[in-house]
Image (cartoon, rainbow, N blue to C red; front, side, top):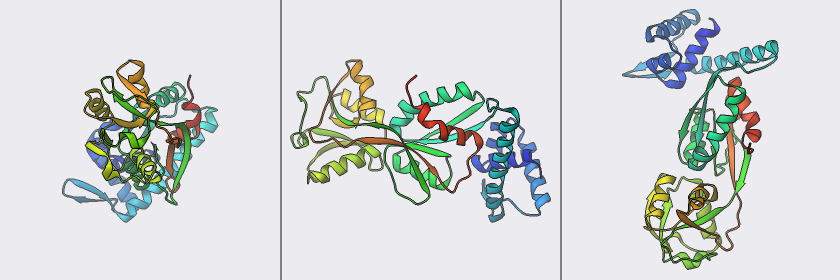
Length: 297
């Protein structure tokens, strides 16, 4: 059993496919299959069950995957120690991101990280905050960046950035801010889906003000933050969104931003990782430097 075979094995696990793993690491599919077969012969166990077109880890495969991550991490740490630096470290970093971090935070963080570690590559999986937390729990991403906490003993949250939510309206709207939430109930609203961090914060604010969500004139729900903004630009409705997301459109004089009176809860964006997951060296370095990466250059 050698480290390269273990590396190939982890790629098959991550991609859940021999062909996709082969494409990722620039090997032929037959070579990848040969490495897995050699591992199975060496260990005298089956690592995958082939169910139709899908491959599923066996219990032995699941145990080996955890050991493989630890051994590959140890190899990377040895390289850093012996070479006195980590600039030649390479590997894939898989990040789950809710909509605002995915659009406005992660590109800047990736740019700064690659200035120091140019061989790092990234796979960004964008989803709602709740789905990002679920992906971190099930190990399909290395860590997540999201706008809401979902408590679980396995999850560790690192606060990265603080901001507020604001009301956005089209340039044609007759709303003049600042406004009270009670004054907006008859206006048509565009809302994010229930799993988004923004929606969660809005619901908490409504509950605090003893306002049932049923009293709102909601005309559309959307999964996508950009789609929501387009609804507002077309004057179909108003919306409450991240100030970070709204600022770009406001600066271009495309929409209006209004402060909501008594809506002073500060919203944090967090990096979240699974305490039970062994991170690769490159992912570990990103997590440890996240605070510096988010600072403006």
